[in-house]
Image (cartoon, rainbow, N blue to C red; front, side, top):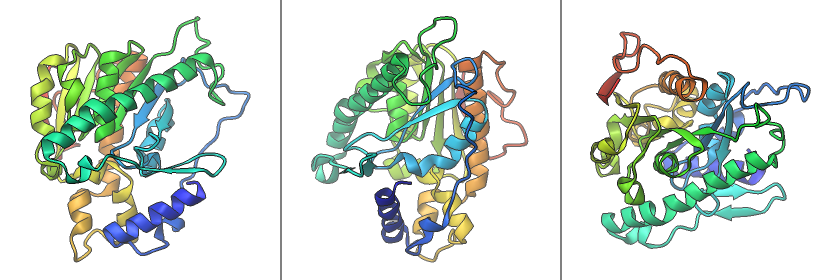
Length: 317
């Protein structure tokens, strides 16, 4: 993480979850960098765009994004400026979350309206901007990305929470998006009235009741809008933040059973490594089908004994 972001996240983890100050500085994620003589192209590693949760940060999802990238995909994670908790630019300039007051003191209906009809469309525009930049060849390291048979760029968009809502809206409104996946993202606002003609994968957590129990009902309300391949799964033992790095962090620190129960409420009872494996397997299966034309993985539609935590709620497979 950049220095100001690292300090911010360390303080946030300490004040919100009781994680000892300085703990975040102890973690390092090892990466393997491809040599410049091996340019990244759409054929070698198709494009996946990731959108973070409300008031979160792309740096809170590094384990799952790294796992997906290591499986043969080019992953671009977006920090949505003034929406993310903190965005630190290369020159050191910092922008903090600047949500309107109604998201703190407004009614649930007012909050859903702001998220669904104001913030998510702006996020979707960010996705469009990134796709435009890839097509122009203006992203460092991806200059030759679309030089495959002269085709335009195509991508899958995935996200957590509000980022998942963003992914579904992008799938409905940008023809370059060929698949959309949401991890525990309530579908609200504009997206509820959109037809989605690309494959859709929906994750719901057991702890989604912490989101006013809106996740499952919103998936149900939107189900008929999804016109092609679609699956909705429910993962036992999960909570809303199970899909972030928080679970891995607290397990490595031995803090999951913290007496206050705050961590358990946020991350559920499933271990960080186990939910990472589940999300990785389902994500790579989904992305392999949508971006590489691979056969549908056998656990879709009917999870095997290998994944007893996973229940298929609805599927057309």
